[in-house]
Length: 428
Image (tube, rainbow, N blue to C red; front, side, top):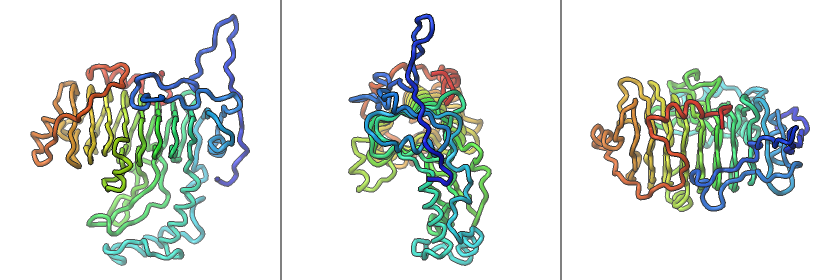
């Protein structure tokens, strides 16, 4: 835990009757996922901490309080209410640096002209610049990750609640709700240089804003994911490559299943959402038949790629608005054994960007894409992709029909509906 942590503050938040006999408005922290609302509604549904006793409702204002509330003992559901911005890196990157770590020494030691591009850094000893970088990275890892237990609701209170610089780990648990929070992407303070990554080497970073890892029944609703004060456009270049300080905004991996992401904003990011993290057969064994995810009424704005990139899962993407800028690469990544259904979505693409780029084929897998519009006009995304990219022909028909949907709006109405309602601090 970070230095200077204060004691956990517990706030009891029971619901009381209003004056004159009127009932109090329903506490959003006790709301559950509606029936049929995406894959997270399948089976037992998703209730998070809705049934928490008053003693297990926590209001937090600092990162130390937030992690203490997650770790508080006892059994049963819990609710964590976040007020204001909880900052996991308030002391800055220097607070995580191991004694002796020096970035200038790192650059001097591993410059391609000195080190070359044939040997990675895995064998470097602990007292080397890379060894000290590893130690520093481990300290950051310990400080900014927060493990979410089962039967938990985490919700922002008001319009300005958020979590900055942290990585929410929803790992190996069931029944989690995360709502009404602005997540500013964690910045990797110590990216690793890999000389053997590609023809020119590359910088690789860690930490997603939220990771759903082997967990089930997870509902992410009315959140905003952004790079905030640290956009990639402001990152420096070292060794001729972007000094990449971000990983993903949301990853759903390692046998995770039954996830609904609704009414969120994903903004200003490169590698945004990954569903299934590997093509390897060892990973596939745990992913086949899982990774079932629904995305609806989300805004995907000024992203480069992976919105989402899919392996294995039956993934339903409907009623979302995709707004691209000049950095756009693709939205839907069609990966190994994926079964993507993309319907009733709206795309706003800049002049000169073809709708053929919306779909990106990584592996042979069928896709359903129907009733989508690009710049206000109906477009058959598969047909235009195949016409312009015949070497990457996609097969139509994902082989399943989504039934876990609530209100489905026509694509022409989606920009207005999503624009008014998506993101943290917006109407629910």
